[in-house]
Figure 1 (cartoon, rainbow, N blue to C red):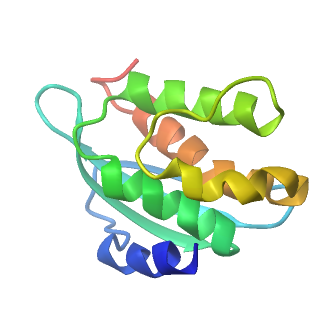
Figure 2 (cartoon, rainbow, N blue to C red):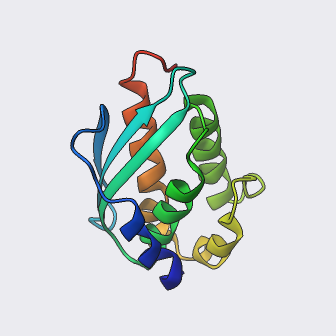
Amino acid sequence: MLGLATGLARFPFNPALPLQAEARSRTCGSAVTIGLALDQHGCIAGIGMQISACAIGQASAALLAESAAGADAGSITTTTEALERWLVGEGPLPPWPGLAVLVPAREHTGRHGALLLPWKAACMALSSGAACG
């Protein structure tokens, strides 16, 4: 997970990205600011983040950032909802690339908020875009 967290340096927050959101976890205090750009089809064409979170939250953010290009609001929302169900044992791990590395985090309920935070921030940013939802 730590290796993934260091990969976030490739996705720095860019205030020029048109779709932005900030989110904070009430359970652990983790925070993320995300910026997104969409292409003409409503798919993610650019992503940047500033995140203050544990290694689990940072790894989750890195997995989102590394495979976000080409995803649309529907796939981000579907993955976020599936992650929420998986964390409480009500469904399988979503098929997003690399998420299997987060399996050990499932038993640490205090870290669930940090794991979900970048995904929820992305959903918030996407919901502010005219081409989304």
